[in-house]
Image (cartoon, rainbow, N blue to C red; front, side, top):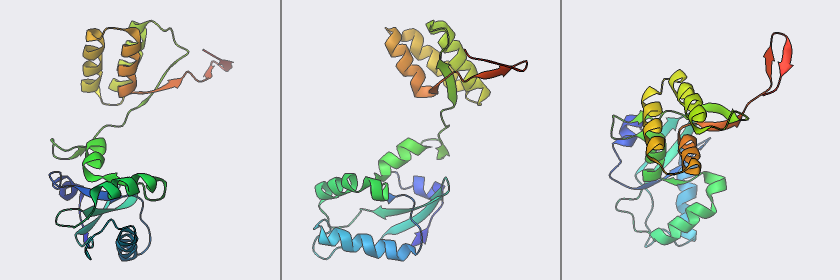
Length: 187
């Protein structure tokens, strides 16, 4: 098993594999156990085993990548197995994992996290909400995303669509009780 960097992981973007997240303990036991389990489920065929397995760390988790190239397997059964065991193994396809966590076209830079933005309880005027969300993005070093969000909203056709677009850029939260001048005030 090879330990790889995130950059090496992103270099595998033209291949497909199964990523298992949060693997602890002896990683070879994981590999052996998954191979055995998939053989019993008749997913791995004709004595095939995952041999090209890599280990990588991301966001404090140890993850395993089982590369699917040159492995005789039933992909449909593997897809069903992945969905059925997601709560146990947090399995994802490599392509989904990369798309959800990294901008693989720009040197594999982690995507910026959506910041929390207190919009629930604010004046619901769409321009007010855009302003609050834009300010939140800028405060979190995401000025380009703020501009992109504003451009998309001004081109959209409805209030509901505008709210959905805002939700793509920020985690919409409620206005918390605020302590102003020693008094607690709710907004």
